[in-house]
Image (cartoon, rainbow, N blue to C red; front, side):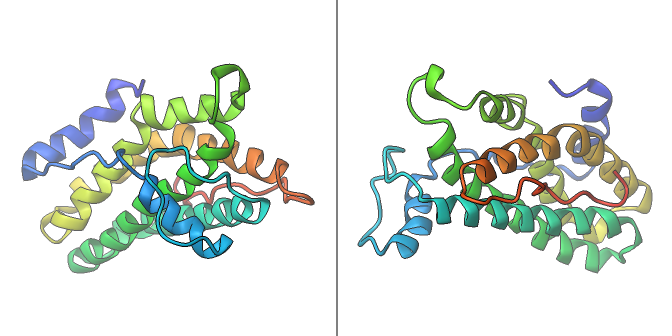
Length: 206
């Protein structure tokens, strides 16, 4: 679980602005099927049951690299958020939030490969990463912070921005990004000639 000293700063800022972020882990099946279909030539969307087609090596590699690119968008935002003017903070916060939410699509593609079937058949490293991201709410914590900045960034004070960025990095740098690295490693291990050095991008203020 996230330590209380990571959660507290965000709670203080959230209460100050009465912002509420809606959890975004939910039914992604149809969205994932829509993502996969153009790559396979499949017709129509899937059922969204989670029992859809198994991604190909190309799709695995595409998902991993797209996920990495999205981490770069978020990391770049967190690297520069404290120096942005209020209007730019809110505008760039929305871009970062969109990228963070987009990461879930790529994660869902990889989950179909590495978290499918019985517990014994699942990739242990990816299962551990999934636990960190989902069950420990570390990913949702970042979504909450980006949601706040995308909606209230133009009214936030500099010390509030600093506190929030620091709290997000304390959550993301030691927990979220290493968990994503595990997904990257598993994905590249499943791709012929995969790039074993593929990792999530870090912000400069990690």
